[in-house]
Image 1 (tube, rainbow, N blue to C red):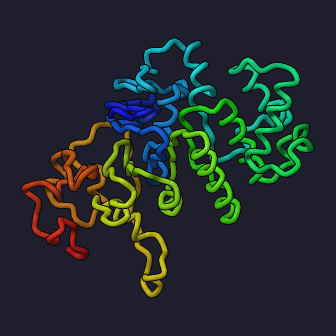
Image 2 (image 1 turned 30 degrees about the horizontal axis):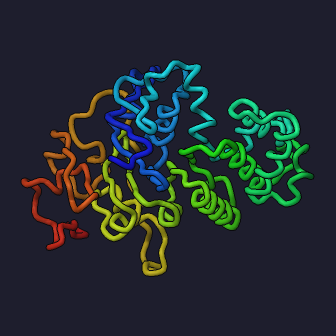
Image 3 (image 1 turned 135 degrees about the vertical axis):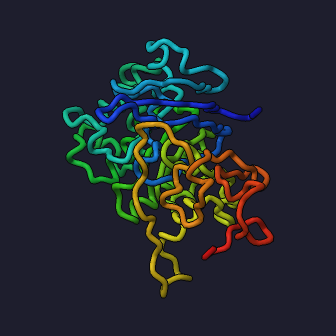
Length: 338
């Protein structure tokens, strides 16, 4: 894409485990445009966080990128030596995680942790660094920022710790922010504040965001494009409006049906039976077949291809192929109960 900031092409990451080789990320392709938020949506175990670790080359020792390309502003990150990749992290790619308590260093003050990033990636030194640290704490909404510079993480609330993590991630104004479940550990009120903060900082800085989440509400508030990930691969991708208007993959539909809403107060919430399958071994059919209400023999025997549904909207599902059984309405959507 001409305006793409990040391009991920056929990315595969495997992990060595006791049960064999785990194909945690299996042939992922997507791109993120400048200034947009791209949401990677799915339940735990689908490979979302491993995708982020692959992009930033922060894999555990057992992990290895087997194939693919990751290009940031046209530069191939997988080809960079580690010393050059360290300069990319923090400077061009910022990262925030779902549990700030375990991400922040407990024996360093919050000011020192922000200063460390500035000293490593910018030319600021001495008093200039101290001034910038206070500015950053103020920008992320920390009250009395100068008074909190010398405090340790344990002295801060969960919401304030997450704001400190955002200050660290955005200290060098990166072009891409990877936010891995950034509000999961926060209560609803603080979650809304953090999302508002990310939106305002994104608008001011013009940065792109890769948002990793299992929360449809967060996707509705933040995303421009959505990719649904299941068992190591993307099964649906669409602009946000198209996705919420017509979730097309059976897994996407189950995610929507399992969320409470005002229109269905008198109905029981749907439950996605079973679990994400083991990724140790190769698949010979659809990965969602054993949990799908629409599956038939072909789903278990043949790997589904990617099928366009509408402009910019596609899904990996046999139901949209030419030989699909009857059970779709005039708009190409699956009929409930078929």
